Length: 343
Length: 297
Image (cartoon, rainbow over all chains, first blue to last red; front, side, top):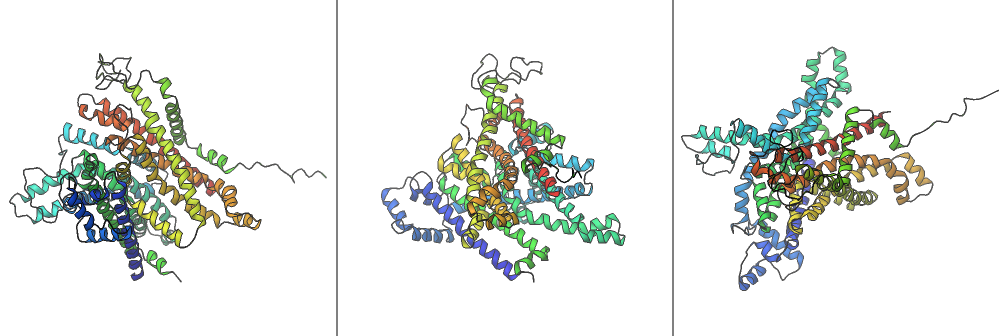
């Protein structure tokens, strides 16, 4: 396990170096002055530009400029947003938690719905229900997300009036920001209307997270189905059948556990895709997350925000990736053995 | 004594012909393939078959519902939008923008990806490991975010979004080509031609490419469905096709404000996107099934 951790740590370092190089080079690639792009200080006088240039080591070699940029990042100085003139790190701190909430809840919905349906499809392999599930899955991951979001708003918020269509929580509730994650903040707050606020927040998150979850859920259906089919063909299942276990026992005791492991390996890979979907959904549902903030900053040509947002969002995705890798390695001893080199 | 059974002329179909044989077994896949061909034809011949110009305004017939509605007019089969533009013509012309351009995008990124991927497969050691990690990092950035960053560099506009999507799609082609070429290189028939004195490039061109081409095509269909969705999404967000162009995503965004008065301006482009993505996915699915069936036999 130690070697596995070291390898992952190594990969993490490498990724961070690449991502920071990418975001550093973006300040050169974006239109306009590099020094304005990296610091976000627009309309600065020539004297203060000279000061900022000194501050960022503009007159030194490109390598030391990068090194200075890294130092700035570690000190928490990510520049100012060009539109709001607020520090980027504060903006990210305000927006990222909402995205984390949305993506994590969507991921859970996708897994809870998708994986069992995939198992059912695999158990009824080559029957009517299998075909039905597969064709549903095909439509599910072909549907354009912005269209689905609009239809969901039309049906569930306007025609049926069941769920709210925009925002994270009703403006009636005043919740102090402590951790940034809305649900935890509500539980920590000492407001007398805690539970009403909690209900309101959950009814707000339900529709967007279901919209985000649909496409990943269909992918989980397919992954779970393939992995279950593979497991059902293995020798230990045949051995269990030969021992005379009932089908139910085989599925619950042996097949599900082994099939789950393979699905979990791919959760990390799906996460980048899920964040893409969440970015568009945030625009449609006016969700105050980092995706909407990024898309708005492109309309306003806020290049500092795009650099910082790219860095923060990719870090988040990569951390989830590594986390699922660890879960997979803990669950599956084979993955660890292979990394040590099986003898 | 007549030895008539010693030489029987047997026909060995080429890998692609075998693939086609398995491919056409499933009726659903055949329907999907038919739709795919239909969309291709529509994309090529759209200027000739659309009844009106996609940007022509018919100011006397604004927001007409489709013809089957009571208020509809049969000369505008699918109705008109808020500027009196014929929906049917716009949808037909949109095929060549959303669907046709996604085809071109995939072909460009396929070619670039295959070249880089096969070169990568021929190198070993440090460089190859670096490339692997590099691809992992690129693949872990969400495709839309990457496209947004590239659009921010190049500026909005249709051709710039297309380049952005090309760049976003390249890593997966590099990945799959590299893995497929490396897998084939370990097989005996490659060893045989190497013993005959063929160099790596010759082996790559004559022995390996014919055997991995189906894998690449099946990846290309996946990439195309992603490309259609990406083009439409960027169009929807207003970063892709400029205003008068009948790109499906941009049409949908145009219809949002009228969603309650004129729902067909939102339903129809969405259905068109769904239809083309399902058709592409069905072709890809059929291809993967055929590949599997051929491998098993």
